[in-house]
Figure 1 (tube, rainbow, N blue to C red):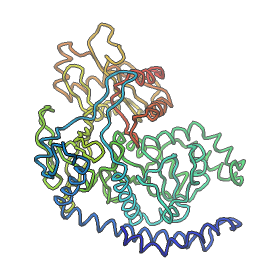
Figure 2 (figure 1 turned 180 degrees about the vertical axis):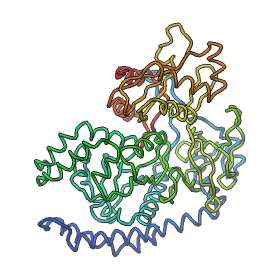
Figure 3 (figure 1 turned 180 degrees about the horizontal axis):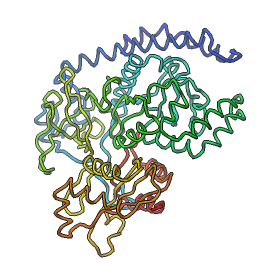
Figure 4 (figure 1 turned 60 degrees about the vertical axis):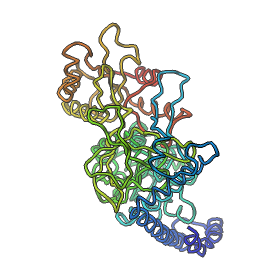
Length: 531
C-alpha cells in the first residue's frame, strides 16, 4: 500500500489547483482543468486497481496460506494468559474451542435486540475499498462512457459502492452534489441531465422506490424542472419528462436518459425480486451491475465480471476469516465440519461462516451459496437463499428461494399482474389464526392489478402444494390452513424499509427480509392492505 501512495503522491499535488479552480471558475460547461482532473482520477484508478488486482491474484493463488494469515489475525485478540487458544494457530484447535453460533432471528419482543454477526470496521473497510476499486475498473472496461464527467448520477442518499471514493477518484462520480441527502433532490438533479450513461442506487429495492415515487410525483417534478427549482429553467426537459411518463413504466429509464447503459446497485440479500421487476418494467433493456455482495454490514463477495450474468461473486481469502459449512440434506441441524475456501466443490451448497477479531465468534451468517466455478484457488459462488428467511409453522420448512419461485409462478397466473415486492408472516406473529390452523399471511405489492379475487388468492396455495409435498400433506390433514394473500397499497414497502432502517441493530446496507418475525412490522403492512 505504501508503494501505491508513493505512486499517487504527484497526482495528489493537483488537489490545491482543483480547489482553486472551483473557487474561481465562472460560466457553464467543463473546462480544461475539469478534464485534467478527470484524467488524473482515471489514471489513479488504473494504478490503484492494478495494485488491488495483483494483491487479489496473489491471495487467491495461495488461498490456504492467506486464510491461515487471516486466522492468526483473528486470534491476536485471544492470546491472553488464560485463553484456551493461547499460542495456537491450528485450524483444528480453533474449530474445537470455538463452536459455531448463529446470527439469531430475535423472538417477537418489542424490546428485543437482534444478535448480529461480528463485524470488523477495519478489515471490512479494506475489503470494501478493494471491491470499490476493482468494481470501478471492471465497470470502466465494460462501459467506458459510464465514468465520463457528468455521466453518472446516484438517486439514493447512499452509494452502491461499498467504500466512499476519496480524492482524486470522486471526480469519476460527478452526477450528484457531494453531501446531498434528500432523495427527491437527487432524483430531480438526475432528471435534469438527459445524457446520463449510468444510474446508481444503493440497492435495487431502493431504486424500485425511486421509480415508484417518480411516477407518483411526476407532475410536481416536471413543474420544478420547468421553473428552474433548482438551477436554470428547463421547460423542454420538463415536457420530455411528462411525455415519457405518459407512456407508462415499461422502458421509462431509457426514454428519460436515451444514452443510459448500466444500472449499478449493491447486492445485499433479498434483492432479486426488485431487480426482476426493474428489468421487466422501468429499466427494460439495461444491464445491471453489482460491485459486491454485502452481508452483516460488510463485503463478503467481489464481482469482477460486469459483462457476465448477474449474481456471480468471488469469495476472497483475506480477513475476516470465511469458512464454508456444507448444507445438509433435508436441512438437518447436525452441522458438518466447516471447510476452507480452497476445499469448496463445484455444484455444492454451503452456508457462510464468518469470524473476525472483534468478538472472536464463528458466526453462521445464514447466507447459502452454490459454487459455480473457481478463480485460482477460491470459489466463485452464486447466493441462493438465507436460512433465517424460511417459513415453518408445522415443520414444513419452506425456504426463501422456494417460496419466491412459487409466488412468482402464482403471480404469473394473475392476468396483467407484475410482482414488485412481498413479505411473509407466520400467522402466530399476527395472532390471525382465530382458532383455525396456522397458516401464512402473504403481503404483496403488484403492478397492473388493483384487486385480488379469491380465485387468484387460491392459486398461491395450490402452487405451494405442487412445489412442496410436505406442505401438501399438512394441508390435506388440516394441520396447516390455506395461505392468505393481501395486496398492499403504494408506499407500503417503502414504509417497511424505513422502519427497518430505523432499528439500531439494522445492518448497512439493509438486506430485504422476506419473512417478518416482529409483530409491529407485520402490522405496519397490515394497516396498508387495500385488497
